[in-house]
Image 1 (spheres, helix red, strand yellow):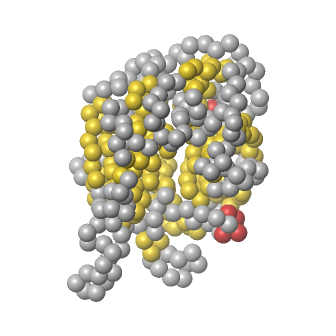
Image 2 (cartoon, rainbow, N blue to C red):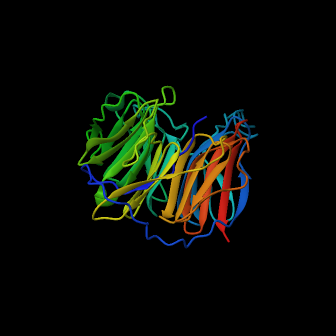
Amino acid sequence: MLSIVFASVYLSACSPELTEPKVNPAPDTTSHNFSWKFDTLGIALSWLSDVAVIKESDVWAVGWIHTDETDKYDSLGNWVKPYNAAHWDGKRWELKRIYWPSYDGKNGPYVRKIKSVFVLSEKEVLFFTGGQFSIWNGSRHRIWTIPYEVTKLSMREIWGRSTSDIFFLGSRGTIVHWDGTGYTGYTKIETNMDDIDFNSVTEGPGGILYCAGDNSTTGATALISIKNLSAKTIVYSKIPRWIKTDSISGATYLVWSSGDSVFVIGDDYWWTSAYPPKPAYRRLPFHYSPRFGYPQDIDGTAYNNVFIVGHYCTIWHFNGKSLYLMPFYGQNIVLYGVAAYKNTVFCVGSTTTGLPVIITGNRQ
């Protein structure tokens, strides 16, 4: 079983000069007190892999959802396909199908499993199957296919600044950028990490991207920065891992940023930071249950309102000073995605039997 690291650290594009850490000035202004609602969608052999919030009454969850009515012929002799999305309108979850053409554009439409969803703006939402992505404007989808010769494998995560500045993360160290110019607009970023599966990305101070990933077989993990489509290694760690006291080290599974801080999730320690102009690293002990499982996703609204989700229905909340594990930890639920908005958080995943789960928390 893997352990978790909660880290907050200011990172620089170049090797920063280490200084004596200071107490982070972010106020402890958010409470750990939430009310929680559990919703289930569909039937077994289904899952929800990601979630994204536009506003309280406009939330998308994606994955693969079977129901009692799907996977059989209807009264007219039509095969009823599974769903690949669910939409929250502020009152209820409605199952949706997003259709995709064949990869050569000649056949379809098909209902494909959706791995990732990301909100660029209220009228620009990205849906990603791993090989195709859709730009949803609120009324229709524009669908693009990533050329196979660019990636040669299926990707897993989508992130972007705009519809002409989108990044895709995947296995074998693959990161691809799209500039919005169509079939020729893809650039593969050289990471030289064929053994790393990248699955977490964030934009930090100065517009620098940070990507984290791991290898579930060998235990290797990595954290890189990207500037001007050029990658630089910050941490590349294999087992046994050597933990340093003056810089980020050990495992680096997930990454998320807020203001001048970049949070890094890894093993056995918690990093915090001083603010610019002189970045500093600080390592603090992090105590957790030995049953705590693999961390899957991280999101927040500010430095003092951050959520980490993972196996065993794990939901951690950091409020700027203290880290709190929500009390329903230990259930047979894997949470794959989390999205925070103001005083609300949405967590999605599935039970060990494959029943899609949505857990919604509202701060009291």
